[in-house]
Every structure is written in structure tokens, then in C-alpha cells.
Image (cartoon, rainbow, N blue to C red; front, side, top):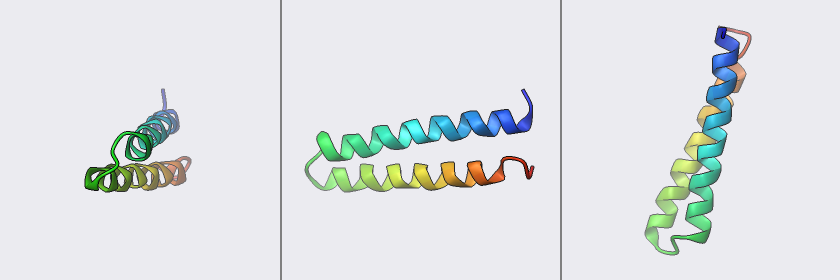
Length: 58
């Protein structure tokens, strides 16, 4: 596996975790904890976006 493949897998895993956290925020937690789960999920999406942008440049 080269660096681009590793970044692609990291992006995929981060997107899955972001979807999981955002879905927990929407469907499971209706109180203040939901806001925290949603914020962390959006952070995972932002980090996955950065990893995707780094493919081919590293």
C-alpha cells in the first residue's frame, strides 16, 4: 500500500465515523450531548476532507 491508498482508507473510515456520530446525535441523543456528538461528527467530516485533499500531494 502506498501513501495515497492509506489516505484513501483513512478518508473512508473518517467518513463512516462521522456518519455514525452524526446519526447518534440525530437519533439517539435529544439533549445537550447530541450537540457534542454532532460537532465531533462534523469535525470528522472536515478531517476526512483534508485527507482527501492531500491525496496525490504527499
